[in-house]
Amino acid sequence: MFLASIEAAPADPILGLTEAYRKDPRQNKVNLGVGVFMDENGNTPVLESVKRAERRLWESEKTKTYLPISGTPEFDAQVAQLVFGADFHGLAGNRVAVCQSPGGTGGLRIGAELLRNFRRGGTLWLPSPSWDNHQSLFTAAGLTVKSYAYYNPATRGVDVEAMCADLAKIPAGDTVLLHVCCHNPTGADIPAAGWERVADIAAQAGWLPFFDFAYQGFGDGVAEDRAGLLAVLRKAPEALVASSFSKNMGLYAERVGAFSIVAASDKAANAAISQIKRIVRVIYSNPPKHGGMLARLVLEDPELRDLWLQELNAMRQRIAGNRQLLASGLHQRSGQDFSFIVHQKGMFSYSGLSDAQVDYLREEKGIYMVKGGRINVAGLLPRAVDYVCDSIIASLAAHP
Ligand code: LMR
Image (cartoon, rainbow, N blue to C red):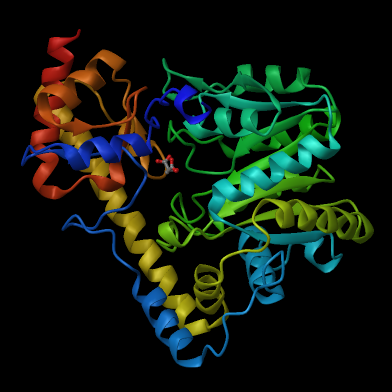
């Protein structure tokens, strides 16, 4: 029998934690696992800008017929401007093409399929460490995956020297995945001077940059966060980008993101997008409409857009506040310096907690975080700060 021969898979290292958390009967349990923003009351709210767009859509929508395979041209144009900035030279030259995707993960998968179909034999390089799902996703698409040096636990920052040394050795037929901002899981981003070096190496070595841009707006701001991507694109002729509205518009469950390409010419962009459409057609045919319409309406309307940017700013401020609370709470209890938590970017803090300490926190304290010690700072509630700080200190004592 076929199904009877299949063995159960292990739980997903990130989403599986949410399942385990939901089943945990303890009252004081805390979920710092999956990267989801929570407000002070523990809700992951629908943004007001999105609610208003949804109301407009409900009133004006006349059909639910299929979208074009790559999404509506209006959505694609808004994404291109958001991701690259309205004055990016590639837009005027029609060298950019966008395909709506089911979340950032869907965008990564479309890119993986493109690489598998047209870059046979090439390797995809991930930073060490990277988002848990990167390795599985690219491997499942049939790519060979290797890693380049990135994080230095001693400095809690990017080891720019080691990273550049590795990147310089990568051959022209390979692809390099770069987190544009809010590196997942470390929160350690490449500094501006580091991006200039990455750009020079990409141009010289000739490998293809594949940007994962899942957290635009969660670092320093929507425009500021694209600086690294633009630095590379000033020197490299081509790039792939997977972006997402899950976090910055809170559209997690709507699964709305995009796969974008920057080609060396408009002709090359046209040819590539025609192949991308073939890829989408055979995987899921065409994108779901609702989330993409919401993102488009928010971005198109100046009033909704302003409101969205304010809401995004408020989410960023809350995360910054949480970082302060966590760093000072741990410092007060231990006398040790935890200021690195304040300097990390985005939703996550790479705490330095060992897997034994992470297991202890889950089993003994009901505090869930990803193996490797990644804490979702965006999920920390004011009422849980003391408990989390006490428990982390207890985990350090229990598993020194
Ligand atoms: C995360 O890293 O927690 C998020 O990107 C959610 C996910 O799909 O893993």
